[in-house]
Image (cartoon, rainbow, N blue to C red; front, side, top):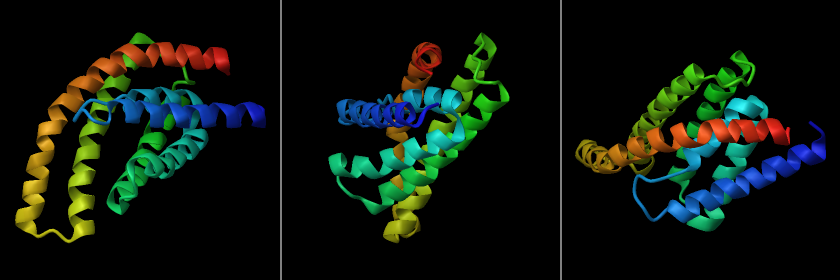
Length: 171
């Protein structure tokens, strides 16, 4: 991919991720970032995806405020996410069959659960919560997890295939 085109795709995608998070940010458990990123990572691979997720993680601080624990969570989680789906995309030569799509949805949902699990580790550690506070934090996070899992089953099922097809056209 030529450098200018690559930078344009990366820049537009970061803006799309921030816009998607901004639009749905007020509704707990409802998000589009996972679906948008999964398709990108699957098609464009690890290197481009890591650039996107790190820039997204840093730039979102301008919109949502700077919270160090959230920044740490985002960078750790989304780099893992980029590697997982970049490797899967490389393994399958960026070709999405129906069976692979089901696999991506399943792994995407597992990654959503991992996000919550990492948040339940990183945030209490960062703020120095004791055992009781950590358990309370983890318990409170469960109310957003079920809607987030259901949302991602739906969005990953609907958006992954069309986005991968679009990326093939864009290049």
